Length: 131
Length: 136
Image 1 (cartoon, rainbow over the protein chains, first blue to last red):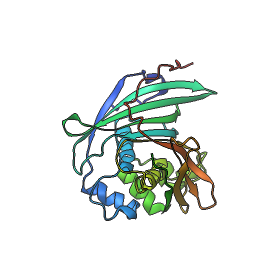
Image 2: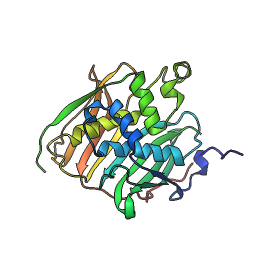
Image 3: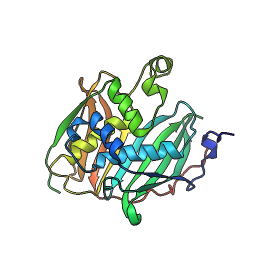
């Protein structure tokens, strides 16, 4: 049986929704360079990559989602950058939810750590939740 | 903080770039990839992933002389969609109070698609909002 859809009512403030393990591997770099050619000569990670990694973690952990969500805003703080191929562990929380003017807003917090638990980056994703 | 200009960085958005970004982020939402599906939504057609444009702000910021280390925070709002065929440019200017940079991404016609603020410091783990409102 498939997991139930993450609806607005299911989110509990402060609840750990899950963890995602990831890394900046060769395929990541290949795709990144295809999208952002100015980084083609770089052999290291960049702060911009943190945003993509946060999205991977969010999409992996908060799934399945209702159709029609809208990404309204995002905050990312970079403390350290991951090394290439370093293991990255990201925890996802629900940190806010509210209904305002007929719209449902959900804010997720993400905290990423690298090898040995060293802090990498954190983020907040604010979405208009469809259901 | 020494205030220096943020040099603009431009990206041409097309279907190939969007497909690559979908694979990179594993976000295969048909609003980004399926013209027939997207045409039937409120967006009226395919739109690019918002964070694809957001990354351009980070690139502009990190390529500037002011960015010499990690420790920056970037907070943005996605205000308009980006579509295939758009040429988007990330740039920024010093905030009036000197505490950071106003950053944005605009289309070729000047219309902004992302607006935000970049500041040095302020890194902290996300916290449950003290003022969180219960769902009503």
